[in-house]
Length: 154
Image (cartoon, rainbow, N blue to C red; front, side, top):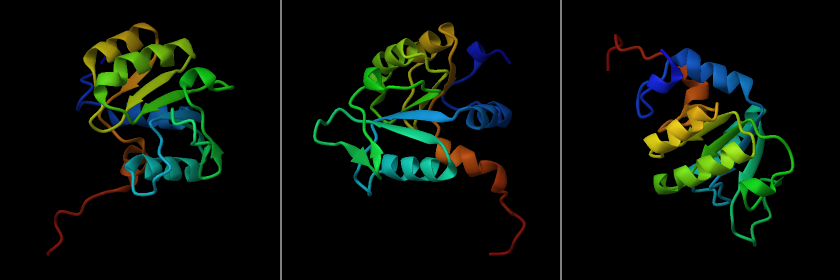
């Protein structure tokens, strides 16, 4: 199926997600948090421990690092190439973040669970980015190994 026809809320082939997760190395996480109770912290931790070069992005000027990783206050401040921009912000901000992801030369735009916008997806795809929305890379990373056994007795 052509990428432009992908339903960004639900319908991604496992191969499409696997190809993205195996090809990207550097991930800028917009909306990264230093609060260990926040989901973004856990996702950053797991992706970092899995070997991805994580770049936390948070506008708070007092936040300088998360888990020992330097924090950038905007995508524009990042000092190296970014393969994927992962978005942990309200979906109303996604279009603006997409414009910035395109400007910095990202190859993938990934909206976290609950983060999707068809206009942003179209903009990103027209600029040549692969797009995933309303999904969690931490979950998708381990999904191939999770096989439910529905035949087991309770």
